Image (cartoon, rainbow over the protein chains, first blue to last red):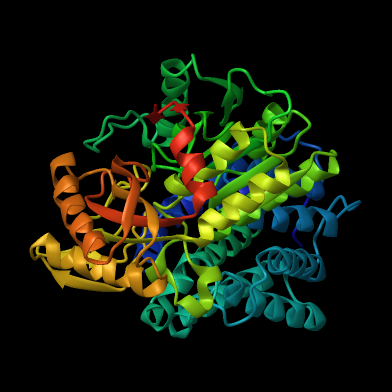
Length: 214
Length: 338
C-alpha cells in the first residue's frame, strides 16, 4: 500500500510542475486558438514556483504543509485568473488533510480533489458546462468519489481519475465558453479544447504518476 | 528555458526574466518620478500625497505605456506589474495601495478582464480589512467585444488613456474618493473604442505568435492580447476600415454634435506616420458628424507588444470632463501634457 506522507506529496508537486512545463507549448497553442495564448506560460511560472517551494520543504513536512506551500507559491508569483484559482485550490487541499501525517486512502484523495474543485468554483463562479477547468475536474471528482466507496488500490484510483479528467478535457471541445477571454467568442469556440481543463488533467496525471512511483 | 540559448529575436535575455529585468530598468529610468514599493509594484516618489486620493492601476505587462507608464503627476499614483498579458497577483496591488494611501482613500481602475477583477478584488478586500477606503472602477470601452445588451462583459482597451486623464485630474484637484469614483465612472460610460489588428504578437515566454493572421488579412475588433475580433477582412485601403470602426463606435453611443476627447492609439508595431493617416480619416468623419474634437492624442498608448494596428477611442465630454482634461498638467513616466 502506498505511504503518502508530506515528503511524497512534495515530490509529487515537483513532478506535476515538470509535466506542466513539458506541456507549456501545447497549452499555449490550445489557449491561442480561443484566448490570448498564455495559459502554458502562466501555469509554467506558477508551477516553477511550486516546484521551488516543494524542494525547500523539510523532509518531515505534512501533506497539508506541502499543499499549502503550493498555494503560497501561486499567490505570490502568478496572478492572471489561474493564479488565484490554483492558490485557492491548493489552500483548500491543505485544509482538507489538516492534521494527517499520511493520506493513503482513496477517500483522502477524493476529499482533496473535491475540496480543490469546490474552492475553484467558489472563486471563479463557473458552472459545469461553462468550458473551464471544472469541466475536467468535476467528472474526475465524481469518478474518485465513486471509487472511494468501492475500495481498491490508491495508485489505480488516481490513475483512472487522471484518465477521466483527460477524457473530460477532450470533451470540452463541444462546449461553448462562458468564462474568461474565450467567452467573448461564443459559438466560434466550439471545436476547441479548453486549455485550463487540459492543464488540470495534466496536474492530476502528475499526482497519479508520482504516487505510483512512490 | 533558463540557461539555454535564447532564440527569440527580441531585446531580451531569458524570456522568463523579462518582466523582472524590465521593471528594474523602468525604475532606474524613471527614478525622478517613481519608487519601488515591492517586487512588482511602484508608486510616485512623493507618495502618499497628503489629502489626495491615491489611484492604483495595473494589469499584465506588454501594454506600455499602459499601465505603469501613467504613474506620475496628473494620472496614477501607483501601479502593479503582472507577467506578460497576465494580471498581477493581489500582493503587488496591496503594496501599491499601502504606499499611496494618505488616508483620503484609494481608487483601483483597470480593464475588464477576469484575472484583473479577481486579483484586484482580493487586494481590495484585504485593504478594506486593514481599514483603507478602497473603491474600484472597471473599464469596458471595447465595443466589439460584446453586444451592447451585455456591455458589462466588454473588455477594457485604449479608452483607459482618456478615462484616466479625467480620473487623474480630479484626484489631483484633491477631490474626495466618491467624487473621483463618480467622474471616472462617468468618463468610462462615455467612452467607446474599436480596434483593428494587422499582425499577431509573441509573448516572449511563449515563444510563438499568439495567433496567425494571414499576410493579406486584417482583423477588426481584435483585443490587446490577441483575442479574436469579430471579423477578418482582406487588406484594403485603411480609410474604409476606419469608416467601419467609426460606424461601430457611433452606432453604440450618440456622439453627433458632441464635444469629445479622442485617441488614435497605436498597438505597438505601426509607425507614427500610419497613425496620422488614420487620424486624418477619423477627423473627416468627426467633421461630417459635427463631432467637436476638444482634445486629441495620436500615438502608442495601450499597446499589445509588437502588434501592428490601431484603435480609435472617443470620449463624450461634458463641461466638467473637458475642464479636467484641459486644465490639468500631466507629467508621468511615459506621458506628458503641458
